[in-house]
Each structure stands twice: as structure tokens, then as C-alpha cells.
Length: 164
Image (cartoon, rainbow, N blue to C red; front, top):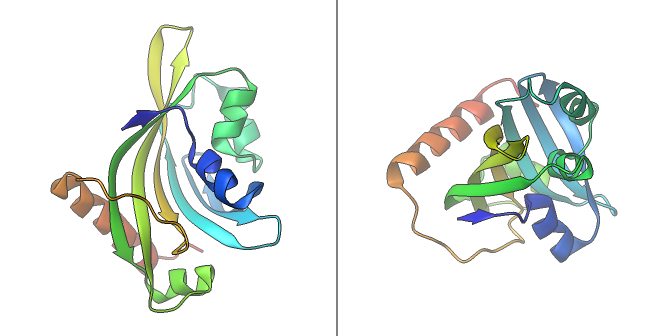
């Protein structure tokens, strides 16, 4: 599914204003929480930055802790969100603790965030594994089982690894 509605837009429609809390970041990677104004965690994101060299100042602004989609929009860049797959995921203990819900699951979306350079060239700015709070439901869609397996593998490695 292709859309110009960002993950942040979905969260803000449901919970009001949200902001990122960065847990880990490098020039090529970011792990963050999306938090409501009253401190409730509503999403956990694993971002891999892809084609960032074309927007060094904007990328630096994002690396300073800013919201990715909102920052791209602020600079008048077209943003397209391509949802590659979505599935329900049984949360490991770490995610249960983060979301404050035990013995739960939630939806995961694997997304490509595209933007346009010089009104001509579409670039993949980032890929994002979005893990949503168990309080957020989506209508399930049929997803490519191979890609779901790849994303599950990413999640397994991430939550066994040393990321915050």
C-alpha cells in the first residue's frame, strides 16, 4: 500500500501530539519510541537510513532527534510511505515492559519511506520496522510470507542484541 500518510499521522489521529524519544542512533540507524504528551509509549521504531547523502542538512536535523517524516515535510519534500508487509507479533518481554502490557501482541509494519529529489528521482530515504502498541488495531492485510519472515528475523536479532 502506498500513501502519503505517515506513521506519526496515524498515531496523532488516535492519541494527539506525539514525539520521538531516541534510544539509539548512528548516521545509518535509529531506534526510537513514539511517546504521547502524557508519556505513554505508542510505537517502537527500528529505522535503517538508506539514501541520505542527497539531503545532508536535513539528515543532520533528523539525527538531532527530530521526527523523520515531519522534518522531510517541513523542508517541502514529498514523502511517500510504502507498506511492504504487516503482521501481528507476540511481544518479547522487553516490548511488553516498554508498552506496559504483559502477555500481549501488536501489529508490525515494514515500511519504505520514499522522497523525491529535484521533482524527478524517487529515493528510498529509510526503511522502518514499526511496532505498534497493543492498543492500536489495524485491519489485517495479506502480506508476502517471505518478507514477513525476514522482518521477524530482524526483530528476533534486534531483541536478542544489545540495542536499548
